[in-house]
Length: 432
Image 1 (cartoon, rainbow, N blue to C red):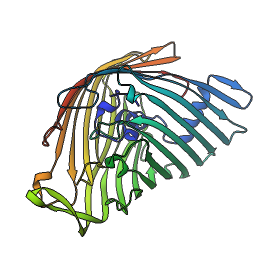
Image 2: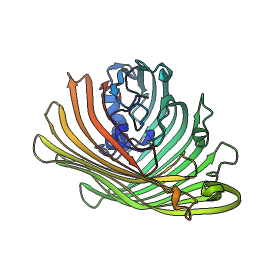
Image 3: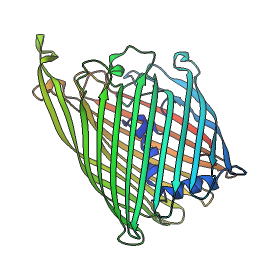
Image 4: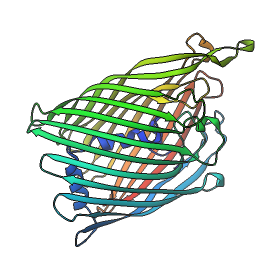
């Protein structure tokens, strides 16, 4: 993965949950996934019989970071780039079924830090069933890359992710939609003996149920239930037998010329069973006591919100909010609550050129089984400023550029840092 990409600078989320990626997902113009599949097929570069094919070509990132390892003294800076090649193909034997396959390869290259260089691979296969009132999807995905786990970890370790997922949605009436998604995934880290990574290797099972009801032509309130179960692979892992249960209510609008909005709020119940209590050891230093096991239950206020509003024909505003729990690799902390806010004001043309500043603020609030030990409570705050721009080239390639400054302030010694970075991506627009 790239050094500090224009997505990673948006703070402290898991790489698979980068906020800019969330924005693209939430700003989709289609509620029903069948519309997205049909649009991807229509955008294919080549049409040969029942096959629709597009090349994947570009750079996942080209950039510079003046503080690669997020240290307090800004010790290491470097340039990096990551060229990418691949292919995406759809096979459509009839009007109802579609088979998609996608493979890509990219090489992460650092000019000076040769120990961070390496190959990254991705492969994905999906089958879609597109019916009048029903949508079905089954998929499998493999990804091997080198990236930061999240904002609290500076190392970039080779990781492997394997996932199998499925989706089913049914429209019982013109105003209602029921959607069920399920996912089984596995995360492993290679070429490392660092316990902070090994402690986070895990299998995950997620089931999500959502009911949407259309109250008007553009307004869809919804109710959502989600269950996540985790099986950690390292022996005697204190996070094993962990589950998250969430209930949310939300609102989504059909994308209009002026407004796109989706938001949901709710409660996530975090259930940790039989984890060692952190107590004061010799000299008052914290230590885990395996003889004192406790159940840690916590209810987290969860929030996810995105809005895009056209102020005029050329001016737009984008705003996003996120509050969610994330597993921590730090000693004594089971997880942290990541809060993030971002606001972007920009200018865009009919040809999709965009440019504008973005303000970012965030906080990581660490938690665990140490409620009586205030000496190890930790809280990190983030703030930053970006200038983002998008340059389309003849509707074939798109160049996204981000230049920004990010500062982290921690109440733990030697964990504060600051730095600036310039990063860009170049991608072929006809491949998703």
